Structures are given as C-alpha cells and as structure tokens.
Image 1 (cartoon, rainbow, N blue to C red):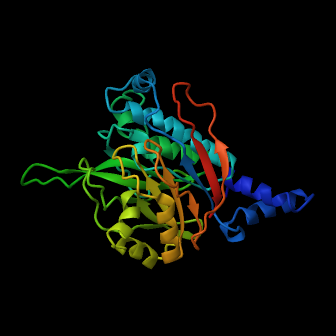
Image 2: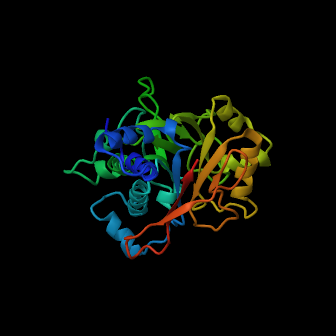
Image 3: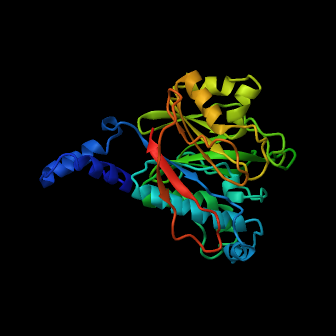
Length: 339
C-alpha cells in the first residue's frame, strides 16, 4: 500500500493536531487518517473560472503543431489547464476533481471526438501515444490518455467530460458499422483507471452533433460513497419538464452525492437558468450533496459550486492556477471543500 499525495496531505493535517510523535506512531496515523472511514468527508475540487475559448490563435496553432488533425488545437491547449488543476488538487489534498462538460476542452470546436476507453483500462498506458506517429495515435486518444496520466501521477481521482464515439459491432451482412457520438462523463480513480462512464441522455435541443445515450442513471463507488452523474441540461430539465426520473434512478441506487458537469461554451443557454438554485432544490428534495463545475464562455446566474445534503451552500477554499501559458487570458482556479 502506498498513500497518494492527497492521502499524505490529509494525514499530515490530522497529525498536526496530535503533537510530537515517533516514527511508528506516524506510520500508524498515516494509515488511519488516510482512510475515508476516519474523515469527515471527501475533499472534492471543481475547476472554476476556466474559459476554453480564451486562447490566441497563435497559441492554438502551437498546440496543433505536429498533428494532422485540424480539430485538436483547442483540446490540446485546454488539457494544459486541466493538468494544472489536477496538480494543484494534489497539493491541496483533494481526492476527487470535477471538471466542466466537454465544451471545457473543445470550446466552440465540437468536431473532435475520440474512442471511449473501456471500464477497467488505464488510458495512460493502454491508450498511450505512439511516439512514431503522434499525429494519428496521440491525437486520437489525447484527452483520456492525458487525464489518466495526470490522475496517476498526482494520485487524484477525476470526473471529466469529453466528446466520444463508439462503433457498433461490424455487420457482416451489410459490411458496415455505425459510429455513435456522445457527450460522455468518464470517471477515473487515483491510479488513472476508468471506473465508470455515462453517456448524456437528455440533450439540449441544439446538441444535434451527438445522439442521446441510453436512459441509464449511473452511480459509481469511490471513497466509501456512491456518487451519481448528471450532465449539464439534465440537471435543469427535471424541474422545467417535471420529470425527475433520472434523479430518482440515482437515489434508488444509493447515490448520496452528485457530480454535475456543466458546459455553456457551445450552446448558449437561457439566462434564467440558475445553477445554484437548481442544485439547492435537488439537494433538499433528495437529501444529496451536489458539486458542479462549469466553464465560463457565457456568464450564467449562480455557480452551483458545493451544496450540502440539506441544501446549504458550502464555503470553499481556493487555489489559483499559476504558471499558465501567457496567451491564455482566463483566470482559472480550483475551489474545494469537504463533501
């Protein structure tokens, strides 16, 4: 057993309260206090203040250098922000990082889709770029590969959202196969292994470039809790259309917390949508905590942030991201709290 950076940070905070101890006591305390059973909650972070379109054209060109895929520029650039956020999360002892919907990587470019990794695989190794032909292999899997490697290196689990595609089984009678494009939440543990994924079912009307995933409310187990997945419009539509079936399905599976990836970078949502008000209503209705992450292409009303299971707004700490490329003009940060 080897504790991650996040676990070590949590143990060290607890040890400060104990006073001087010897080496054996330190080892025991590290084991005890790094266990979720002995903590008040899971330290969760969200990326905030990130605008995926705040890159100069020259920066996008630099990110695209070496690739024959013209759609990769914004994705490669924005992955740098995500990597920086994961590194900051590790320094703060954060155990789970939540990122915005897929537009947070693609920006206005929604033509970049990549194959979905299977549950149980580690994209850092199983989908590793081919050094001899980065343009074909590295770009093809660049999002899941980069995020998996960052999770593994930092010891931080992540809930990220990307545009993916999945092929049907080859039909020998018609000699064809069909590609299905989705908006997908991919959850990786602290080793970078994929533990769950969920295709967005309820699409916003303008999201015609993808198809809805099956109706399959999805919950994943992590840190001794069950977490439900909600993607952008799905979080709002339950109240607007009076259809709570997705939330019902999550709670029936035992979800006590929800991760909500929101993206306003590509369709422009109505200003009346209030993320915080919605998250509070959901928390009060079901007794679940809610953590969200939203990009800032369009400034919307009420960043949901962190809401506890009673509907209260949780105060957060902030780690401002530094050392970012000079041609990126947004001011991203990681907000975090115990959930």
